[in-house]
Length: 141
Figure 1: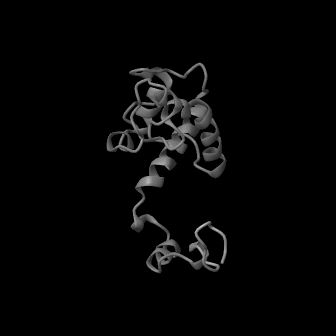
Figure 2: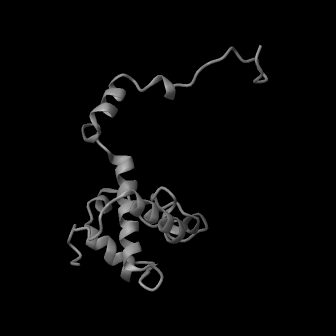
């Protein structure tokens, strides 16, 4: 696939995203962190921090570019072609795109029922309930 292609060769479904999340946690979190922001253990231990997947440059990067970097490496990142089979690389890309959407979703892109909940300030099930007052030690009075 060309590096500038945004085609995705597999059907996007929950099973693919779950596989991508699993593989991401194994291969990517040491550097890129659980949230894709570049705050993995490697960066915490002093190595150069990788870029956040949430910056505009990487949100706008094509799927082919991300696949190429994962396959061949880039900068300090070594290629993972020997460790991650092609299908799993695509699963990881799907998961990375889900991570990116999780921080950059627009209200207009949400389904109507979720937009309505937002307009109403959320459902009562998501609001914390107060049961009595607390004294200075945190116990109930």
